[in-house]
Length: 446
Ligand code: GLN
Image 1 (tube, helix red, strand yellow):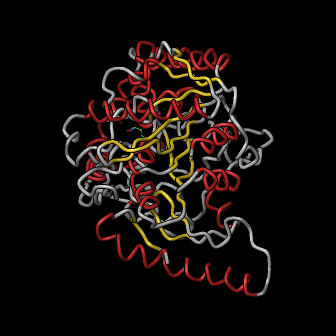
Image 2 (cartoon, rainbow, N blue to C red; image 1 turned 180 degrees about the vertical axis):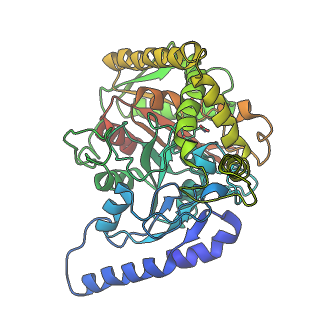
């Protein structure tokens, strides 16, 4: 059914970079045979999935939607891929994204933009635009994306699906092509909250192959679904409800707050006073880490190599000039500048200090509140081309999501309603490793 659905809608939506229909069908048939023989199957066994194209898949092209990796075929699976394969989920293919996960609209893909299934003239969000659109358009039951500053939650909001960025360290990053290693997390896109919990059950857990993976006990993420949230205290940060918020989005948030009140929760305004620094801090730290991570693309070890260079330095230069797109180059330049001697203290080190203040804002808020609720993005999905010549306007679509990455806490986006026919995302943020309770609250709302 999913292969048929992909054939039907893919010419319009263009979520997939690579399709692996044959292998998916074979895996589905294996599960069918098991069911026919009366054998028990696991919760994800036979459930068709798709993966953002920055997750390494053994023997399957992994391009990061970059010319630089246009022909890169990894010799191994990312830990999350290995886990989902073991769970028996057939892989339908790899999904389009902003090049190296840098962007908010999927317009930075080197190959083609993905369309928003709700309105083909609008972006699906980004950077995991293909992963959000595929689930929204019924082209996969679930998908995985990565979120460095909002790249799961913002496209989930724009496409009206559920998207979760787990606590930093809860899901192994082994085999995720690195963008900004202290911020990157892998997480699911699903049609509803229960599915999100089921996928989390499959992908979360300690992994010795990722040194930042947390060696803690991992819960059953479905355990609290269906339990009441009566008496919970929900904080709404005033810094997220101000300037730049579309009236249609504000109206959906107000209605959602009423639903939480009706569920017995107590909703109060709260403050995260350093919020205004999240954007500048993120755009120092993320490019700094990216400039270091992307140094490996030199035409020798991976992917693209430029033709016609006379010596190796020339080859490096030509390869990187031709292989990277404009946004990736902008990040590498910003990051290299912020890390250079004489500027390091003023920019990178300062940003790290403010990052700590942002984390402390959340620590303080969570002393009083069970969870924090905000819009996922200040606007609904915007038309193609409307922000491409203004990087700052593009960066602003992540103002509500960046802080969770800087603080390392989990963030969940669910559909809160619609404004002008387009989906509006509701973001729930919680304490580190409090995903089961975030899911509980989201399930109660849904
Ligand atoms: N839009 C943000 C950026 O361009 C976040 C991207 C992401 O989370 N990968 O960096």
